[in-house]
Each structure stands twice: as structure tokens, then as C-alpha cells.
Amino acid sequence: MKPVIYVTRKIPEELLQPYREYADFRMWERETEPVPRDVLLKEAAAADGVLCLLTEQIDRAFFRAAGNLKVVANMAVGFDNIDIEAAEEHGVVVTNTPDVLTETTADLTFGLLMTTARRIVEAADYIRDGQWEHWSPYLLAGADVHGKKIGIVGMGRIGEAVARRATGFQMPILYHNRSRKETVEQELGAKYLELDELLQEADFVVSLVPLTNETARLFNKEAFRKMKKSAVFINASRGATVDEDALYDALINNRIRAAGLDVFEKEPITPNHPLVQLDNTVCLPHIGSASEETRTKMIRLCLDNLATVLRGETPITPVHK
Ligand code: NAP
Ligand code: GLV
Image 1 (cartoon, rainbow, N blue to C red):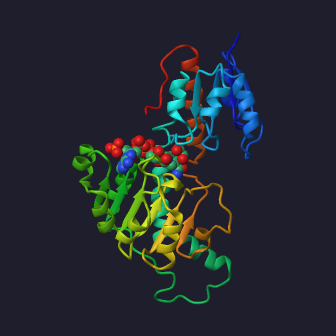
Image 2: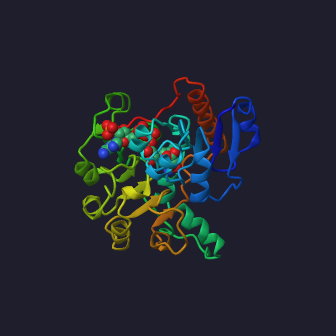
Image 3: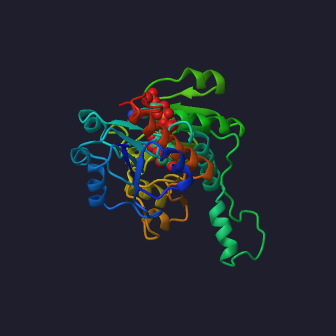
């Protein structure tokens, strides 16, 4: 009997086709709507493998319900939606999608930084709203990017790719991790700083840390108080690394200049979200890795991870605690 794989969102048949030889696939057939929890638990109970998205909470109750499960392939590099301890207790392998999305996410992160600093969305809306009547010296004037200090919190794969882009803009690179990364210091001239020092020195503070117990609400009232008044904050990691009330407060009181946000504590957000209402924010719907090429690579990597585990081989990109 072939193993059963449950896929929690509709993915293109042409990507599944090569894998149909070894597995029977079941799928939540909607493209834009997450699978309801009761359906997920019911399907997981009969599955050997699950391909899930970051919209699914893969928690202890899920693993209890999934008696035959051997592998969960998360279509994301971040895996804060999965209880890894519970997975290990149930003997389930968890995989994610590192590397294939690094450059695409770095493109978006740097693009968001530029867009926020140079007020590009506001400027495009200015024309759409029929407000452009004259050119004037300070019309929609933003902040320079080139030559400014970028402070990357979470100098991992994506952080490093963002730092490489920043060198093209002659930006001195500051970074903070729990451990030093000598390669970026040698190759890009990056300077390691404690978090507080980085917050005080950087013109752009960029969050690329994974969401963990340690990083939840890392960017809180005190953190925003330490930043320069002219600082621009960019979050491309997870919304919950930020205290959104404190960020709102810092932005509305001009304690920092602006924020570019690809992620939010509770997604999706609506136009009524306080951070969307501000003029000095650029808010995006979690599109860091969203290029057609990269999303296809992520799906393929998930399918390859599922195939290797279900064949009794070593997974390609297992998650480590
Ligand atoms: P990664 O290579 O694991 O990098 C994470 C970095 O964060 C590591 O260098 C790690 O260094 C550092 N870090 C971890 N805990 C820390 C802490 N408590 N304090 C300071 N630094 C800490 O991961 P990645 O592939 O670059 O991805 C990073 C994150 O980006 C993902 O976890 C995900 O949440 C997010 N992401 C978002 C999108 C999007 O669409 N917006 C797309 C892809 C990824 P140390 O271990 O030395 O601390
Ligand atoms: C997206 O947010 C990811 O973690 O891959």
C-alpha cells in the first residue's frame, strides 16, 4: 500500500504528478483559504505525511490525533507554528524550506527598506489620488538609504543576504545574533554589537530573527526608545517578535521615523489595523518569499522531504531544535 500524504492547500497538479507513483495524495482543494481545524485533524489521523503551511497550528493535539504520521513538511523556513517537542515525542520528523527562499526574501526585505525610507507607496498613491499638482523641494522627501548604517538582528541566511545587498549601497553593517558570525565580519566588514548598542547606532533596524520564546516581543517599548528618532524599523521575520502597541506608540509619537512590516502578530490584518492607518508605515501581506520561482522550489522541497522520509531515507532539510 502506498503511503498517504495530506496537503493542506491546493497546489498545482504538475508538481504533484512525479510523486504520485509512490504516494496517494489527499488535499484541501482551496487555494486561498486555510483548511479548517477539524478537517485537518481528521485528515492527519489517516496520513503518513502532511505538507502544511504556516497558517496551520501543528501542536500537541495535532500529533495526538495523527497516529500514523511519520513526517510533517512545513512550506516555510520559520517553524514557530509547529510544536517540535511534541513532534519528537511522537517520533515525527519535521522539515522546513531553508536556502531556497533566502535570496527572494532578502530581495523583498531590502525592497521594503527602500520603499519605506523613500515613501514609494505613499508617492504612488499621491498620483492615484489626483494630488500631484506641482513639483516642490520637499514634496514626499524621504530618508537616504545609501551610506546609512543597517543593523540586522538575526544575521542568519536571510540576514546575510540582506547584508550583501546593503554593501552595494555602501551601508556600514551592524549585526546582532546570540553567536558571532566571523564570515560576515571578514567578507562584508560587518560589526557585531550587543542588541542595545545596535538599536542605538543603526539607521535601519531589520528584524530577521526566528520567533522563539527568547525573541517574542523583542522589539518592545524599551527597544523603540533606544532607537534613533530618525530610525526606520523593518520586520520581515515574524509579527510576534514585535510589541505592536509599542511600535504604534513609537510611530505616532515620532520616536522613530517609519516602519516597513511584512509580518504581523495575528495574520491576516485588515485595513482597520492601527499600523495600516499610519502614514509612516508600509504594510505587506507576508510576501517575503512570494516569487513564482521560489514558491515552486519550496513546494518541491517539501515533496522531496516527504518522499525521503517515507522511503526510510534521511530528510533533506530536517528542523533542528
Ligand atoms: P536562520 O538562518 O536560522 O537565521 C536566524 C538567525 O537568527 C541566526 O543567525 C541566529 O543566530 C539568530 N537568532 C536566533 N535566535 C536569536 C536570538 N534570541 N537573538 C538574536 N539572534 C538570534 O534563518 P533564516 O533562514 O535567515 O530565516 C530567518 C527568519 O525569517 C525565519 O525564522 C522566519 O521567521 C523569517 N522569514 C520570513 C519570511 C517572510 O515571508 N517574511 C520568509 C522567510 C523567512 P544565533 O543562533 O547565533 O543567535
Ligand atoms: C515565511 O515566512 C517563512 O518562514 O518561510
